[in-house]
Amino acid sequence: MTTVAAIIKPTADAPFEVGTIVRRAPRANDVVIDVHYAGICHSDIHQAREEWGKAIFPMVPGHEIAGIVTEVGDAVTKHQVGDRVGIGCFVDSCRECENCLAGEEQFCLKGNVATYNGREYDGEPTYGGYSKQIVADENYVLSIPEGIELDVAAPLLCAGITTYSPLKHWGAGPGKQVAIVGMGGLGHMGVKIAHALGAEVTVLSQTTSKEEDGKRFGADHYYATGEEGTLKSLRGRFDLIINTVSADLDIDAYLSTLKLNGSMVFVGLPENTQQFRVFSLVGGRRSLAGSNIGGIRETQEMLDFCAEHGIGSQIELIGADEVEGAYDRVVRSDVRYRFVIDTATIG
Ligand code: NAP
Ligand code: ZN
Ligand code: ZN
Image 1 (cartoon, rainbow, N blue to C red):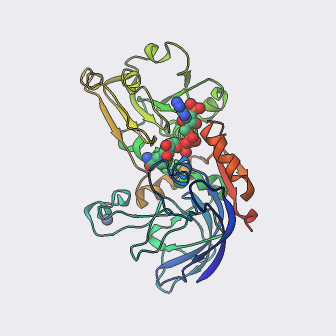
Image 2 (spheres, rainbow, N blue to C red):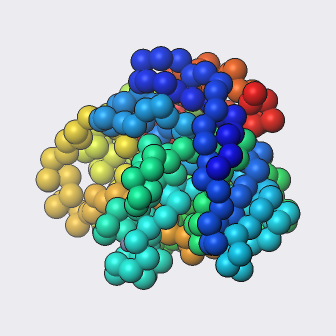
């Protein structure tokens, strides 16, 4: 066991503090990773503030982890000391249910082991990436290809795969009209990836304040939903809408912008129950769907795709003492476009 410095949330109401946690000694299939960077996902905020229900405290959030392997267990074959690696939203799964066998471990029927705010199958609580070191089974550790710097790679482990997976599943590509709702951490990755897949990309943001950046990331069109009549003017326009918004939305208004057979896919996870009129679907044989991160195989595919297309996240690098302020800025939609913690600043 090793004592490791970490950024810890003692309770939902208490501010973060720097302290220590204990990491297990590596087992035969484990790799020990020196965490260099950890992204701040809005899901960290939802959980650290208990917006999704009861959470496990003390909490060390962080499921966008990039670092270097420093030690490997005896049976490890996939990674070596010195490898550039990443960890996303889960660190284990049952490995035998039909979804795990299909490489969709994010939908493990037993329930996978979340990277933090979860429990290992032996009951031990998990602690995430806002820390100097993490120990995990090699099968849940991704390879970060040469060509993507570790700091801009970290957010790919959640924001990247969460947008890549539905874009692929619902066939984003040449000839397809794709809308990305919300230009935050997930949204800006959605724009970059949808553009690289060859789709025509529209951003639907609350304002046009980030239009220049959106177009630089690959958006062809950019509209402010806060302006009267915007969604009405886009009626019947999109094949696919990826909704990354963390708050309540007028779903009927967005559904009306779908073409015949179009799909609106939720990846944003607001705490409240959402509502829509069934007429909004039936009128155009439309689908309302959801998507959750991605499996290990697809996450590796996404990392390789991003390296090939020169895609990283647009980040603001921060120190350990800036996490509270960063959370407040994310909640105010004032993030450009992902905060990443430089773990060298912890302890
Ligand atoms: P984020 O950086 O805060 O981005 C969310 C964006 O939504 C904001 O930047 C803002 O974009 C827009 N928005 C915020 N409040 C809004 C409101 N009241 N009305 C309309 N638009 C609003 O958050 P994120 O890290 O990308 O995460 C987004 C959501 O996805 C969170 O709920 C998170 O928990 C969830 N998530 C889900 C998965 C999954 O697997 N399904 C994975 C990761 C995260 P504009 O300023 O451009 O309007
Ligand atoms: Zn996340
Ligand atoms: Zn399983």
